[in-house]
Amino acid sequence: MATNRWNATLYDDKMSFVSGYGRGVIELLQPKPGEQILDLGCGTGDLTEQIARSGAAVTGVDLSESMIAKAKEKFPDLDFSVGDAETFRSACQFDAIFSNAALHWMKRPELVVQSIALALKPGGRLVAEFGGKGNVQAIVEGISAVLNENGFDANERNPWYFPSLGEYTSLLERAGFRVVYAIHFDRPTPLADGEAGLAQWFATFCEPFFAGMSQEVKEALAEKAIARIKPSLYSGSEWIADYKRLRVVAVKQ
Ligand code: BEZ
Image 1 (tube, helix red, strand yellow):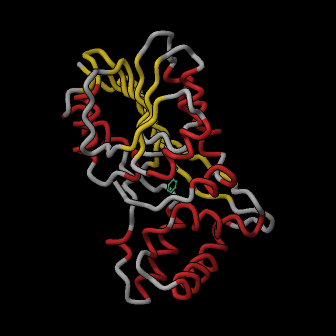
Image 2 (cartoon, protein in one colour):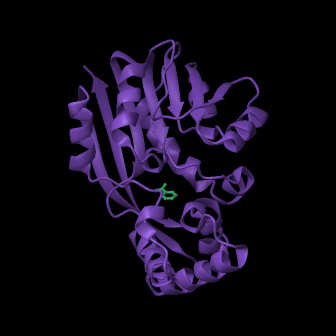
């Protein structure tokens, strides 16, 4: 999983659409009172709290210490801990594992799927949404072109894993899951704050592309990348990010 140093406040203030869209994934989860549910990659806990309202017992886990600190501050009655999905092991097994907008940060998916399989009861379900093949492609291409032209290896720095539907469902099947629902769909996503929207999105999500660079170099390269992406994604009044989502429901056999 990428060790992004998240700005949890910026994430909550400007990227609230992440948990907004995630409510649709909770509808797919259909949590029930008394179920034990793991929210994998829970961020600052908004969806964990929504799931808890169903009466299920929820545990939120995230790699980012700052996200978990914020989640605990916001929801002191809920159970949150720092953990790495690639190596995560729990003492108990869960009825369901939920994950929204997190699995694409985990670049060793075989290990993540193994952790998920071990953490579920037989008959337990994985309900997840994350970036699929082609997700934020115009953004990735713009950043990559600018980094490569300036002597940085964009591929090596790219923190994201965006599999095709076939690739991810096959991975789940190999790990002993039956995939009962899978869809790969476009979700053009308007960003907040008009012309500043993509710069804020960069500040929240793109740190790994610019790791180790001076502030000056980082800002100059980000500005160039944003200018390059503008003709594709800026409408004249707002940025519409080219999100493509994968949603899956898979049952452990
Ligand atoms: C996503 O939710 O698809 C996403 C968010 C941030 C960076 C990359 C992808």
